[in-house]
Every structure is written in C-alpha cells, then in structure tokens.
Length: 472
Image (cartoon, rainbow, N blue to C red; front, side, top):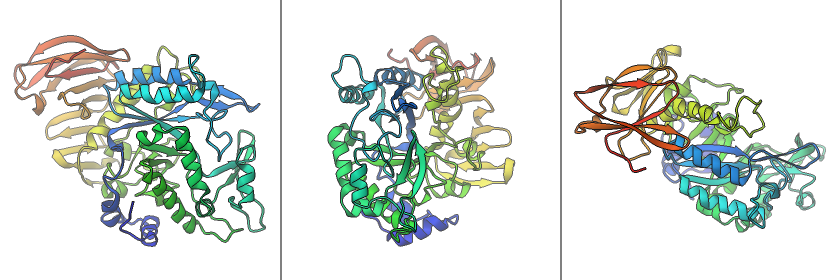
C-alpha cells in the first residue's frame, strides 16, 4: 500500500503526537483500507496451550473445545462479528521455537483428524458459521536457541547485538533466553518474506481470514550493528506492508509501546496509551483496541467516555489465569458481564462521530453526533432524552444486526419504565427474548401503548427486544 507521507515525516508526527497530529495525511492515507471493521468486531485471544517446565504442551483449550466456546459466544452476543487469535497453536505452545512457526501443535488436534493442521483448518472453516474469523497469535521479533531456525539466524547476523558484539537478550521465556530479531537485517536478506510465505503455505486460509496478531511488536535498535530504533521502525513498516500485500491486516499488543505503528495497525489489544486527544483525533474505524490493561497506566475513565470492548480470554475456565472461580458451568455469566457492560456501548458509540469533551476530570462529558452524550460523573449515556445507560442498567441497540432490536441488561433486578426507540415508531407490538449461550428463547409478545412500556428485569439476565418476530 502506498503512503502519502514519507516515513520520516510520519515518524515525527507519531512520536511527537500533539493533539492534532492525526488529523489529515496519516488518517486519510489509511482509513478504510483494512480488511475488517475492527470497531464493529469483538476481537479476542484464545489461550490454547502453554509450555510446561519440561518443555511439553500444557493444553488449556483444544481446537474442538475452541469451537464449542465460539458457538456459545455467538449466541450470547447475538451474532456479533468476532475475530479470535489462537495463542499456543504452534509446536508445544505459546512462545515456543520462535522465529519458526511452521508446525501446528499436535496436542490440540481432534481425534478424528490425522494431523493438528487438519484440525486447525477444520476450525477455521467451522467458525465462519458462527460469525467468527479464526487467525493466529504470533511473534516475529523473538528468537530462541531451541528454534529450528536458530543457526540460520545466527549465521546471517539477524539478531540485535550489544556494543561489545554479544547478542542482546530481551528476556527468558519457557526457560530459554530470548533474543531480538532485527527487522532491517531480516527484511534486507529476504528471510522475513520467506518466513511469512512459508506460514501462508502451511495455512492458506490465513489470507482469507485477512488479519493476524503480532505479539510484542516493539522496535529496538542494535548498537552492535549501528542500527537505530527509528531505522528499525521504518523496516517494521515494510514488514507490515508485506503482510497487507498478502491481504492480511496486522494487529498488535500495546499502544503505549508501539505508537509508531499507528496507521499500520488498526487494532491494539491493550489500549492504555491512547489518550483523550487521540480519541478525538482518530475515528474508531482507523484505530481501536480491545480494552485497557488494569496492570498498565492510562486514563481508565476514557473507557466509559468513548466505550471499550473486552479482552475476553480470561473468562474461559481453561486459561492460565483461572484460579478455579470460573467453571464450565458459570463462565458464560462472566463473559456476559464483560460483553454487555462494555462492548454494547463500545459498538454503539463507534457508529458515531466524536465531537469533543466538555469539562475536566470526573466531570467530563463526551459529545457525539446524533445528540449523544456520555457523562462520566453519573455514568449515564443519553441520545437526546432517551436513556441508553444509567449506571449498571443498559438499553442499547444491537447495531451489528438489522432487526432494530435493543438489548436490556442490568446488574439489579426491578421494574423499568422504558422509552420506545425511534426505530419502533410504527410498531404495534414488540417481541421479548431471553438471551443465553443456548440461543434466543422467546418469552412473550407485548402490545405497545404510547411511547413507554414497563419491563420486569432480572439480575444479569440479558433480554432482546425487537419489533419483529425472529426466526429461531
């Protein structure tokens, strides 16, 4: 993809980032060029497998179990578009044998398949039935000494070095030291291009998926090669554009560490580095993220003012962070809480233009097109006089559907007097459904009289209300 800005000017804009840095050339050059609309997709990771202390696979979620979770999520989210990146899909699990990623983890295969590759291809096909794109979580900057590519990368001098010429170590993962791959050296030798091409030969559906997640994609210079961080960034862009030439968007991990990838990456998993000025400068269709990481710094009130999605991966009973409170029986409740209390508002606000913010601190009010205001002090979202959210009570349109339906979700039970949305102006009746991991369950039909109606709301029991009878 051609860029209207020279890289030098782009880098200057992004690293300096005054409040207006994103306004014209950068945004106009890239906005709308992505293969997915990330602002209207639930983007998550699925932690499938880790490497244990003996170097063997520690399986959390097999490919078959992944599809079971996807099926339930699709019902809970009323078919919202989903992008799921698989973590630990290769070799013996997460962070194993990089820079190689040419073998699918056999511990994750289905019994009826001959190989794990067949199982992964099956998963990528089947997930489409549930509005889900399956792709991969990979790392293209780390190199470990147990990798089948280790000797090649040392021989071709592709690893960053300290000033004294020793290899620059960046960490220890799975009991193996990690070394940094230089984007400039790997690109100029053509070895990166061959590496990506080989991955696409292994899994051709990746190009149809149109997206991939690059973990810890961070620029580091090499004193031993006299390569600066800025020069490395320019080659990271070449690599990103090579992905895009194959029809694949690149998402990555953290805005606070990779701001120089704005304009190249449409989605960042951890969004803590995105400021209030950033929200007003960039539309969500250009740059968005899953959620703020609670362990990182950042103005976390921005999550409410502009909407946030969800990380999601920690709500499954089979994940490394689970300390037994999340089970197969109750995980859907944890998932529903995250989705309904965050993503509904996020998807709705992402359909609007961000106009500005009035007041400061905890008194801020975010202003959107369509006369929508988001008030931080009282946790209220309104469209004119229509209340879309009042603290933990949600009444948002399902903007990803075409049936004019609204979702009701509350942390507290009680009787609610709800307004008739404008989309229901001509409706004489409404149809009320319970939402669960098993699908929509018709509850009742109700005649509308006037502009308001009464609804009994149960604690954490999502309801879907539409002016038309749905096929089930």
